[in-house]
Image (cartoon, rainbow, N blue to C red; front, top):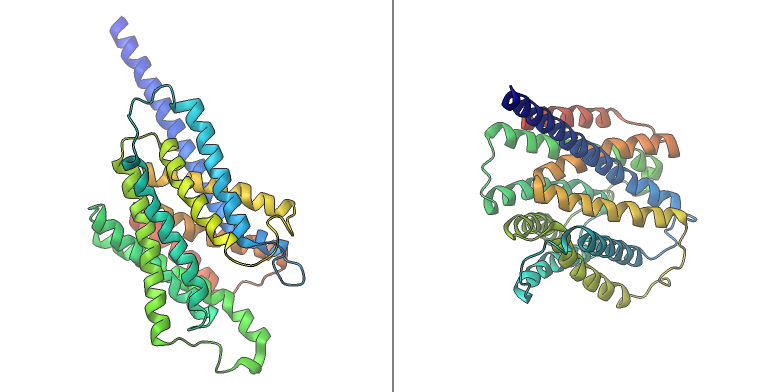
Length: 322
């Protein structure tokens, strides 16, 4: 009888722990969806006379610094006493690669504007969903089922539909003055946007690979990752002319810094214990939050294509996780 009671007690404890874990993951994913979806509306709230009054590069630096400090604090509190690994440069150097890749992509976004219009870039950038899934399957040796590939394709189609739904009003407002000039892309522009999608997927998948293969605490891995992130983004900020570091900052900008820093830490947790595919679903679902906030804050009128994207995302989630 005593043994049975102990077994039952352990079973109950395991079930409670499992429910807590599931609840924690659900909260994390929902919170990340909300943060991703609120990013663009928050930036719009910051605008003065249609322009962003602060330096975006300084904002990125502060986000990286915040993630670095939080990771350092968590490492000191949670992992330092139990850490039994002799650290070397070999542990740290691999984290420089994703920082360089993200820096390349940030520059590609600016350079590509010379060879295509922003609307075309927004539509074609959805190809990074496919590139991320392909690289995830290749480098992490994760074979996706045919139905899961269909789900990833539906996710990309949902992104395209959502992009077009947001372009409809822009085209109507611009009127006949831009007829024939709204969409254009050169051969070099196509090569650049495909490179952008490849580099974006490679950076994400490589980050997941090192997070999962290194037997180090996540807080220490994040510390390595954000050290290089701060260094690369500081170089990018101080080599470009622009507003002063804190010029144009408001409480909304600080809210962006805080939420994006938390989201970066959450995404590290997702890539460590789940996958980049889950991250793609989080980003896709955030489009719905973006639309809801845009409707409530800026009186955006939703188009039929938006509801098509909602259906496609729902179908993709069902097919992939069913």
